[in-house]
Length: 150
Image (cartoon, rainbow, N blue to C red; front, top):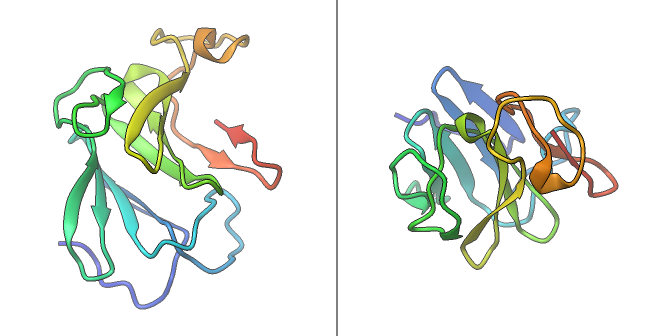
């Protein structure tokens, strides 16, 4: 059961659920950028999907086929492998730390999923975004200048 939210929040974490909202008031937590759309987005770990919770409490799958894997494309057929954290940019794009895939994914407002960083192998390697390597990326945020921080 999802908790009842009495006020806007920026980020909340439960043992097997990661949640961020697309509408909130400024807070001391600078690790989540949000938009004016009134919805909550959740990652039920390890379901391999991103869920959307409307203000009316309707839960729907926002992205992911529910099968572990890596596939870009339309949100309904995209595959994730243990997505763990989320954040929004000012354009309405949702960024996802795809934990087991060692990648960072982007979901556009039009519902297209793409890989924007990571080559899928564990490691610590700087370089061009799609050649970079991560070791199970967790935290993700957009800073005040619009940079994606991992």
